[in-house]
Amino acid sequence: MSLLEIENLVVEFQMAAGPFRAVDGVSLKVSAGEVLAIVGESGSGKSVSMLAAMGLLPWTAKVTADKLTFNGRDMLSMSDSERRKIIGKEIAMIFQEPIASLNPCFTVGFQIEEVLRFHTDLGKKARRDRAIELFDAVGIPNPEERLGHFPHQMSGGQCQRVMIATALACNPKLLIADEPTTALDVTIQKQILDLLMKLQSEHQMGLIMITHNMGVVAETADRVIVQYKGRKIEEADVLSLFESPKSAYTRALLSALPDNATGDRLPTIAEFLSDQEIFEGAVR
Amino acid sequence: MTPVLEARDLTRDYHIPGSFFKKARTVHAVKGVSFAVEQGKTLAIVGESGCGKSTLARIVTMIDPATSGDMLIDGQKVDIARETLTSDMRRKVQIVFQNPYGTLNPRKKIGDILTEPLIINTKIGADERRDRAMAMLKKVGLEEKHYGRYPHMFSGGQRQRVAIARALMLNPRLLVLDEPVSALDLSVQAQVLNLLADLQDEFQLTYVFISHDLSVVRYIADDVMVMYYGEAVEYGSREEVFSNPQHSYTKTLFAATPRADVESIKARLARKNAA
Image 1 (tube, chains in turn yellow, brown):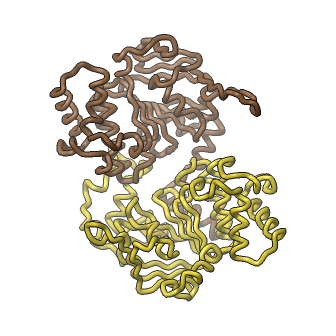
Image 2 (cartoon, one colour):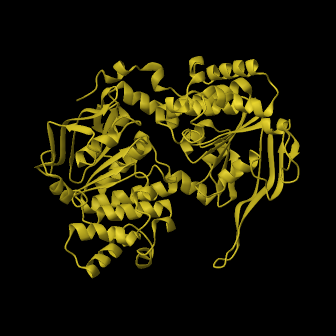
């Protein structure tokens, strides 16, 4: 059975010039132990669709879907308090800017124990032990000492490790990573991706990796969804996507990679594809 | 031929003053770096955050003086710590920054942004300034109607084009590009890289291209310098560095770069199934 099932998700924002469709009929499924990558450029609705699934969008957003279930439970009709019990515990999310997503006023230890205090009935001592155990698991040296540090005392890579530890605190069934390594150096990116993949296979989590980096997709994903302007353009397993992309947009995206440059100029998407051509042959 | 830019053993120290609680200390941001770039060529400087590549960019653009060492532009020695710069000298080197959202003044129209360098550094009249700005807009793939618009009306890729246009207004010899495409989407990145290549061919521009993205470097650079903790650990032609990296850090860097080709995906899936 799929862990997360979304069918025909539509997210609209009311703008002065009328409604704006950020996500236009996206469907997806993730099973336990599977890594799904969602790729797209900025504005393709990849983050918004995940935020909508978690109910994290502001009230100005209008979210509709034919089906939105997590572990067989309907997320759309769920009350806020019920949803809060699931989010952070069974579904966890990692964001792009590790330094911005930690609260600068509290120590990292406080912030990781806060999750445990809210979602579990562990005692004070047990929470601290669990926090140390988690820091150890994500490869932070001297966890006891590090728990008392503030975010500004740590580097970007270390902060991202703290975020991952916080996300994993309650052993979530599904982890959503929104551009987890975009703000990091390549060497640190490698470490963080390796760590995520290791933890994913150890706990058999479902992992949704939102990214715009084709290299990250190639290194992590089992299955890939390509999005453009809020619509799903293509869905395929990772090998067939890179080997024989079906849609013209994916082909264009892959040929724009500097790795694949053949001549002395890179092919660009706008030059040979209009929106209409991109949406033709798009899957629903 | 004299190289457009030559650096001999450049160093830069930052002194951090002490206080009652802290001892004063010195950070050696750049420790003795030498390189040369010839006209029409691109030198890429690669390294992780904090390795001194942006400090080097500040020295080259004559924003910061070097602590020691010589910098020669067109064979002429530059030392801003001792003598003030002539506007002639300033015109030779221009810079494009990483974040196109932060580098354009939101309260100025594109036309004013483009003509400002001319007002400061030259005695060209208003009509001529306007004509030059219009011509430059077209060169970088924008239109004349964009002249009167404000930066917030543009997308990230278009703003980076404006930033490049502004840098080129003074016909510089050398353009320092500090991570010019890392804030852009893949397709837009391709457009901007193409633009840079076109402009280089047209004006015989020399680029110092700072980046941490090795796939971009491999595509655009003639020479590559890898920096690590303020030192140049590897310096050579693109082919040399990519085919036969010497230093262990360069090897780590190559190993860490994600590969998007079919063979490496197959290898990864095979490893996963075996485990």
